[in-house]
Image 1 (spheres, rainbow, N blue to C red):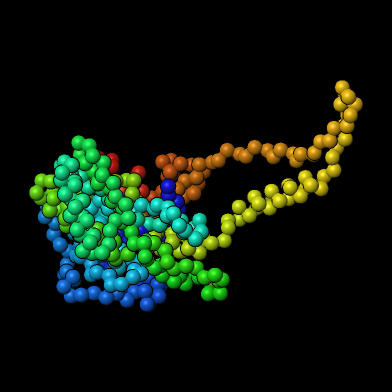
Image 2: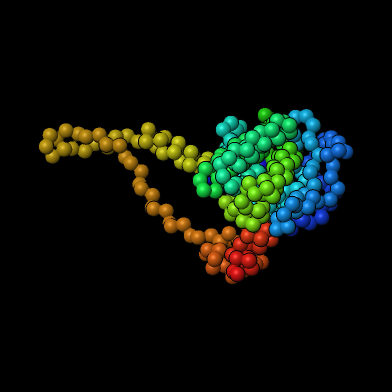
Length: 337
């Protein structure tokens, strides 16, 4: 909705809970932005959580009719995904088994964890989740329950039958054309996640769940901004040509093989038998590669990010996992308390 984590420091960051404009990012075509909705599913304003110490839930988005489902748009990310970040959700980039190229192997999943009082409570939650999935005609792509003193349910949600937008940078004459059937995060997933949050709030109110939402944010999940998501998948969708490094390595190997075939055997004699021994000329060994120099994730300099003195001038591509503000986690005021 094992991970490739490109750093993009030149993109403007959107703060969570910012007011989203009605203008849609211009790389989406107008057809993919047409959604059907029913008045009964629209809720006005945010829904207050049942517990005072939890971040508020956003309004429930309208259901998506038909398949395939289009990837989420900017307004949906700002209205629904950012508030879900504050309640412990994140994005996990996982590989898919069937992919058309190495560049579209990793897809985004919505991910979170729920903690319950005991195994029976966790089992009942899974049963309620199953009923909800049947009603919504949507289900998690994977989930697992770790049964210990604090049973923890891990969830990953995405839409398999998703349709990405048409990017402006696509070559219309490309043969074959780029496939638009790529799994990803859609409004189905955002709606399903909010319904799960409502269900978990009821469990927490009844004492069947232990941890209020948003108190601990898992740093293992990404919480990327809209700009980061667009830039990542634009670049990933268009980079279908093999990388120059792979081509150069292949050319070097072919050149080496051709030299070996064209080189005549070198005659030499053995001290014991005086018989000629055929030896093939081997290429000279290349000098060992120089040790890799640390590259700062902020400024790109030859040092670690902990030692960077100008990282405040280079905002990160993802939000701080501690407080969900647009700064490096090393500089988070809450972390230094």
